Length: 245
Ligand code: SF4
Picture 1 (cartoon, helix red, strand yellow):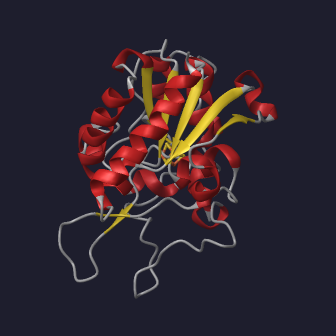
Picture 2 (picture 1 turned 90 degrees about the horizontal axis):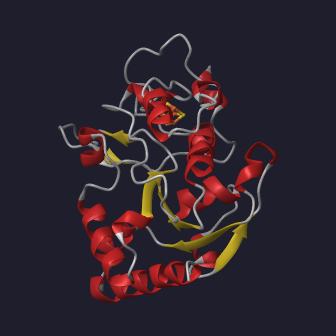
């Protein structure tokens, strides 16, 4: 079963009390599973890639989501911001970073001196992973994607990186870092540092891109001292801006 194939040994996924898979949602499409690779066209036109991603069934997450949320921004951007996955509002609107965390990100980018025209925004996973509240209700509770889902969706990210060819990638949080560097990645070890992304065979053209790691803007929103967290976030983004000089 595709759902099982994508899960790592350390991340069993989620089930409800009756043991049903909460990622399952609607009935699976006949071509579900196996990762996104076979859905990614050869073209590196962002428009073509985004259109193709709309019908991706590379993992089970499309079943519970409203739509694919592909990256957004100019092809000429020098900075690629990599988040985790679309949230509730992004899922409804079909655009990345348009919810509360996105608004905070906009403010932080402005303070860090990174102009809109230089930024492409995307996520490690292109469908919203969520679960209903334990007692029932309409709220959709965010769930981080599993490593298997991050890996399944990675071909879309590699294609976006090849299309945009950014000078620097800003990894916003753990899922972004795991998408680039693998499951052992920890934000605490990497935060604020700039390192080169080691290209893999399938991403040869993406070799040598600087990656700066920071927290996800939603972590700033959750922080006890939000002001201090915001200042630290802006300081990290300034390091990314320095790479461009
Ligand atoms: S999360 Fe990624 S791999 Fe999974 S169905 Fe969506 S676009 Fe495809």
